[in-house]
Length: 307
Image 1: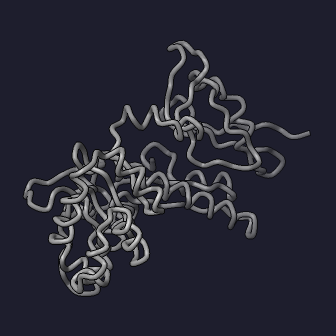
Image 2 (image 1 turned 60 degrees about the vertical axis):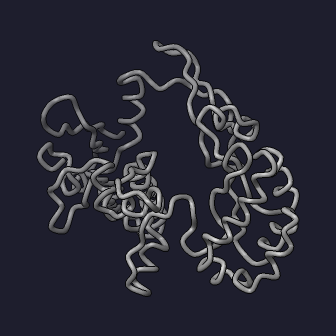
């Protein structure tokens, strides 16, 4: 952006209240700052691929969505909101520097904590949680289900729902630490019981017992889920040159604003140009100076004389 004349220093000189978010592969400082990046690159370098996949597989497995791109956008948006709040207090803008590599490290959560605590390098565990048991995918008669018994009380409810009270009496399963240490044996015992019924029937039984659980849905099942429909998470856009389009909705529900199931189409090129120009203005002497990316190779400065 500096080469194009749209870097932080150039635009901040036009508007001291400017909030400028710069999202890049490796950030604007550090030895990797000039490197290009894609989601796959930062997934690999940021460690998330090293803890993704099946426990017995040596082949690297990419996370199924572009978490390198998405998380950086989310952290960048959070930075913008923090800067807006700060500007209300100080009157000054600032630059937000969000690097994809940094953001991958930030979302490693317990993997980083476990390594820093005991020096053991985390590895892929399939669907199993590294430190909570039972908290993984279990095979039933016809399909897998997810059960997340995150504490002793939930483990007790789970065993009672399966009519496996005997597991509650076993010393090797008496605490979460012991269940995690003996996870393979516990899973064998649980799946022996779960194999007696189909997934849908077990999910009803386990959910009725108050234990967090769920199916492993494919994308078609997610899109057609009744709860997703009730939450307006699949929406329609109004007609445009391309016609109406269905897409994912906004997961942030705000009490002060409606969350309609139909949205306006994306604006055409330059459709909102005048609104943008009028919105991003600042005072400079007796003129309002507006920093706006023009069509030419250099920075254009639009001015509007005030009465």
